[in-house]
Each structure stands twice: as structure tokens, then as C-alpha cells.
Amino acid sequence: MNFASDNWAGAHPQIAEALVTNAGGFAPAYGTSELDKRVEKMFSDIFEREVAVFFVGTGTAANSLSLTWASKPGGVAFCHSEAHAIDDEGGAPEYLTGGARLKGVAGQLGRMDPNALDAAIREHPAQFVHAGQPMAASITQATEIGTLYSLEQIEEIAGICREAGIPLHLDGARFANALVSLDTTPAEMTWKRGVEIASFGGTKNGCWCAEAIIVFDPAKIGQMHFLRKRAAQLFSKSRFIAAQFEAYLRDDLWLKNARHANAMAAELATAISNADGARLAWQPQANEVFALMKDEKAQALQAAGAQFYPWKPPLSFAGEMTAGDTLYRFVTSFATEAADIQKCAEALKA
Image 1 (cartoon, rainbow, N blue to C red):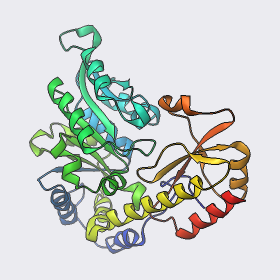
Image 2: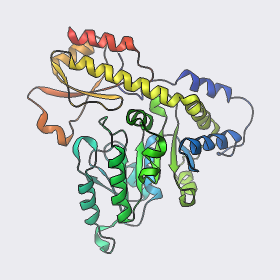
Image 3: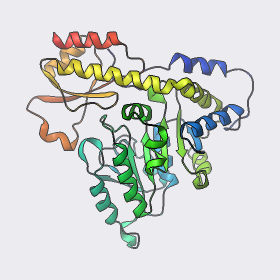
Image 4: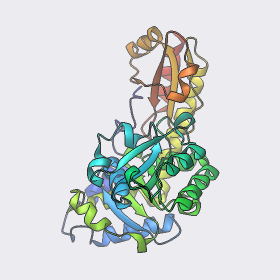
């Protein structure tokens, strides 16, 4: 009953096998091998256009370098006030951009409100040097609390960015989970809606350590090659990231893993809804489930062997809390088994 994080799950056997398969022999380094090139072509295929792909080792690196790619002197990047980039990346975006600022934008349940974004951008007119200049906006899909932006919402935010002359970045640490939940295509969830650069995550969904930055117009890669090198994210043996992605994308393994994780989350949500002393905080849309429980209920569940964490309530949700409630996060993954959900359901009834 390990619901602590999808980061706790190991690697999918097919991805582990791919690492072993590519472990021997020799291959050109620094992203120049045939395997690297083959995987870059796979990304272009799934996104239905030629894209530029930059392998990195962590989601924080992907997000920070994406914002660095868009950075300007005195730059201000806009994201949800409780986004991962603001709350959980230790100042890495500010550090790698050389001092750009992240400005939080309000919005219900993890999603930026388009009107609030428009107003925030207008507070930084490019001609007013003292305020700094807008440089990018970033959305998280799925969000930090397991909610999703609809395709229409992405397009609306992209339109605001386009009017302001700034690129829209998508933090896709759980890209696949969002994609299968929306029942759409990678192209429809990104560049066809106006996203210009994306962090594409594989680590949470079965990879060992594989993340990528996707620039949707190769003519706009700018200085990304140098930025990645300067940030110590140009892996000499990059074939091992490529090998993971090749297995991940082949035969839609990435989508199968995400569908399984999401299905396990839906079953867990049902179990929580049917339990006394526990209730869903909001309906999960991907593979994260948030529940309100009394502390004694949570402690009993943990004593039965379940692993999960208390979570800081979103500002927009604070009014929904009642006395004695604590918000808890449960995360499912490709490795979650139906037996785990059943055991948790039984423990919740105890």
C-alpha cells in the first residue's frame, strides 16, 4: 500500500531491460549516437511535427532550463502561485536563469485563472523598466494537486501569452497521466494549443531517470544547447536516457503505464468515498488522490501499512476544510496493484 509518490516506484521491467540491452559496446557520446537520433525521431512522430529534443536528468532541470531558454534581463515568469516551479524546486529556476523572478498567479485548484494571468502580465509593461519584463508563462499538466487544464483552457492561456509576446511552457512531469485522462494526443495538448516548449517527464511513469525538454519549433532553439551544457545536464552517455525513452515510447508503454496508474487512482478514490471518516477533497483527474481525514483515521490507516503524506491545503480550498480535518495525498503509479487498493479499502473500513 505504497501511495507516497510515483517517484517511489521503480523502473518498468521493459525499461530496465532496455538499459541492460544498451549497456555493452561503444556508442558516440553527448547525444550523437544512432539511438539518440532514433529516439528524437520518435518524439517528432508522437508530436506529429519535427521537434527539437534535449535530454536532461530531472524535472527541475527541464523546467528551469525551459524558463532559462525564455529568459530576458529583468525577466518575470508567471505560473500558478502553488506550482512546483515556485514551491518545490529550491530556487533552481531563479538560479539557472540568472535572477529571473517567478510571479505567482491565483487560480482554483492548481490552475491559473486566465484573467488573473492577463492582469499579472499587464502589471509588468515592457516599457516600464522598474517592474521588469514578462518573459514566459508556465502551466503544470497535471497540476500539483492532480487536476487538469482542459484543451480549451490551455488555448486560452496560450492566447494571452501570444498577445503579450511571451512563450507558454508546459511542465509535464505527469504528461502521460494528463494525456490519457483527456483522451487526446500529444500534439493537441501542446503545440496545437499554443504551447511553445514543454518539459516531458518519464521518471514518474516507469523510467529510471529520463526527462526531456521539447522545443516545438526547431528554428527557435536559440541557445538551448549551451544552456544545457552550462547547467551540467549534457550527459556524456546520453544513450542511457535515450534507451529508457525508446522502451517507454515503443508500443505505447508510456500510455499503458499512465492508464493503469489513473485507473488505480480512480479505484482508490472510490474506496475513500465509501469509507467512514474520510472523504475526497476533490475529484482526481490523473493519478493523485487527495482526501480529508481525521488524524486518528489516517494514523490507523498508516498502522495498517499504508504510506501517504499530509499535504498543504491549496489556498483556494481552505474554506472547504472543517475542524479536525487534515488533507492527505495518495499517489498511484504503474507499479500499483489492484490488491494494494483492495487492502487499503479494507483498512479504511476498519
